[in-house]
Length: 553
Image 1 (cartoon, rainbow, N blue to C red):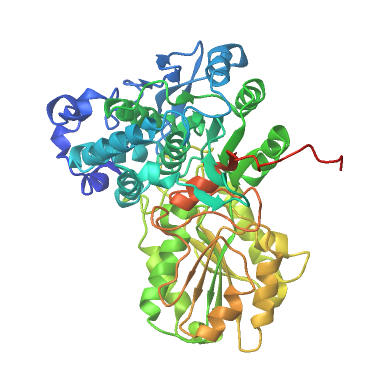
Image 2: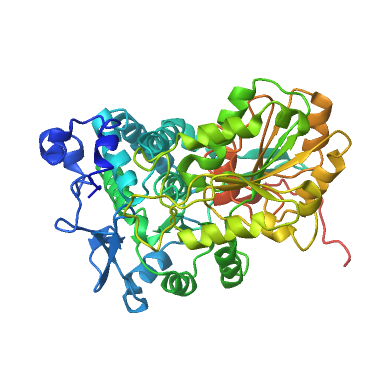
């Protein structure tokens, strides 16, 4: 249950009158009541939701559960399955039944492409119902407290994704090519081919958007995915899968499991999963890469930079975008702005003061600040202290724990913070790892540069180890070309409105520079992540007249 201090602020963003919240599913949600098994608003220590696993089309309870606590006040409000290795038998069996050729492909059961188009069309239509959309927004908000607008953004992206692949679009997505042979009757046909049994392991920060698009992208092209979310984030995904069943998705298309990491690793090994798509920490990604012997696609974090060029334009807008990129969701985005390199001209234009003023508007009461779910307050404060103690560095703003809240101690609660680190200090090999640590919280590094130091900026980008998103703010085409031509980030925004965070349903979103890089959202992302290339060379003759057996070669 939301604390009394936070509830009134959230109500201002809600589309349902507060007096109707507890009776919403049965009184207002004529569609939601047909698939939902939870009222996300009323969940509390006295009304706990029990998440179930899904395997081979059957929802099942696990032998043991554990309590998920509300990130805003520490009250247990969800019971999640604590699935053990002893309970993996049905999941192993389910995945082993899937052939390597997938459940469908261009030469087998092609009518299933059309089935997915119809299901997606119906699901998108229901998500235009404000009550259905609001239900999922509240599901997300309860497990990952962030502003109503941020949660709604997840659902509108999923809705657009479903619209993009409605009708014949799945069939068109998997189109191949034909190349003429070198003699009569020969023709080479290229296909996009599924892997068969696959796994999706999704993160906590976007509980539904990332998991939803990856699992549906996997299934639509012929794979059968088993889906594991971050254990504390299972409720929105469980409800979304039930919603997709309501929209016509067969119940045995996707398996859903709630378990700890070692148990999931056991499942991947025992079920001979042929490809794993993982979004999360670099440490876990490296372990999975060894476990799967490289049979994986990963989006494993990114220390994302923004370079402000020498030409200053619309400083108020650029400052707002910097604040939004760095501090929305308290920086808990893999695309969050972790470092901004500002030309001296931007410093003279008052960039720091503008961003500080915008950051100060954020509050926990309106959830424009969020609990940091992957670090404690002490972790964050220690990192700020480590940055501030570097030669020539200083705290620009923030640097204090939040006050007057009930966030549990295992989570973090810190003001939006920025630490200025001189560029020459940042480029010292012994300081660089500290400066480019991806904290996944409301902390960014700021550095300054001047004319003639473009080479240092390129060196800084070259040293970085993860290359997800980046931004170059400038209208100078030669400057843009110089920076873009010397960097590798998979999604790079360039121009006066450049950002580091964006909507992945209308452009490729994924890292670059790594053969295992996974994308999300677009046709290109689905094909690269969830299909492989297969070529069939048809050769129907004719045999040349007068042919005889040639001599051995």
